[in-house]
Image (cartoon, rainbow, N blue to C red):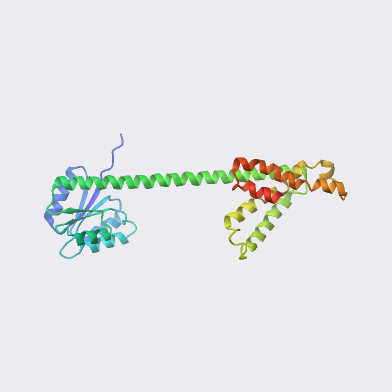
Length: 275
C-alpha cells in the first residue's frame, strides 16, 4: 500500500523556544519540520529543496523583518507559490495589511495555542494540496487537448490528401500541380497578409488553413466525364462549358460536409477555393 508523503513545513523564528515548540508539535503530528533562526538560511534551504508545503515566518526578528523575508521569497520563482503564515505578537490592522500585501495567507498570534496552530496549519496544507491537484488536473487536460488537436489536424490532412488523390486519379496532370499550387498559395497569402487591407483577415492560422485546403481546388473534376476530362486536344465550346462545371461540383461536394464539421471548418475554405 502506497504511503501518503508527510507534509513538509519550514519555521523561521529567532526565538529558540518557539522553534523547539513548533518542531515538537509538528513532528508529533506526523509532519516534517525544519526550523531556522534567520530568514536567509531558510531561503537557502528552500532554494535547494523547494518541495515544502508551508512556511511559518516570524514578523519581528532581531536582525530581520519578516515582511522583507516574505517579499524576498515571493521574488524567487521556484518557491514563490509556497504559502506563508506570519507568526507575531502584534496583530494590528496595519501589520495585517502589510502582511497580506507581501503575500502571506494567514496570521498566528503569539502566545500560541497548540490546537489553533494545528488547525490553521492543517487548513492551509489542505488548501495547498487542493491547489496543486487543480494545477495537475489542468495540465492533464491541457495535454489531452493538445493530443486531440494533433489528432484532428492529422485527420484533416489525411482527408485532404485522400480527396485530392481522388481527383488526381482522374486527371494525371494534377499530381505535382497540387504541390506547386500549395507553394504558390502560401507565397501569395503571406505577401497579401502584409497589406493593411488583408492583415486582419489573413492571420497565420487562416493562411495555414488556406494552404492546407488548396489541393482540393480541382476536387470537382471527379464529376467530369472522361471523354472531356482526358481529351488530349482542345475542348470545343460545349465541352469547355461542361468542364467548367467542376467548380460547382467541387463546391457542392464539400458543402455537404459543412453541415457536419461546421462553418468554421477547413471544408468551408476548401469549398470557396474549389468554387
